[in-house]
Length: 123
Image (tube, rainbow, N blue to C red; front, side, top):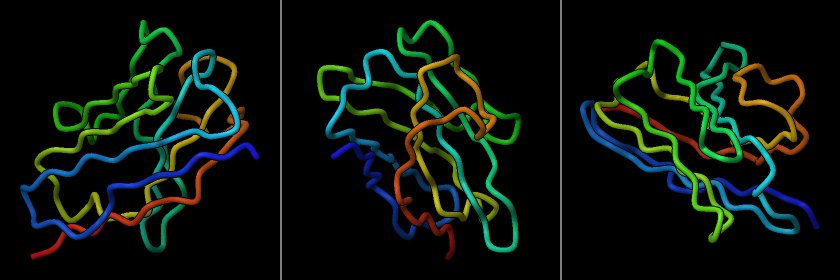
């Protein structure tokens, strides 16, 4: 069974940090670009970050630059999103996704999606 499973979400106070994990099973991520997306209440799904299969390309949307870091460990078949200095606007369900193309934060073209993990930033 091909699937992606996110983990690491939870409740964190403003200014805190959280590390999300995206673990693949049923296939290997070596040749896939991986993107992180999020959906806040009342808003559509938006791209956050992406990383190429070789790690030669990384991209972050302006709202998370300097705060979030994407990385991957192909030996563990896992991609991570380190989130620092979190604020209330980061509250959302976070999804990871895989595609066989280029690193992009546009959701079209991604072949596999996880079920999401909830991140809530609140005091």
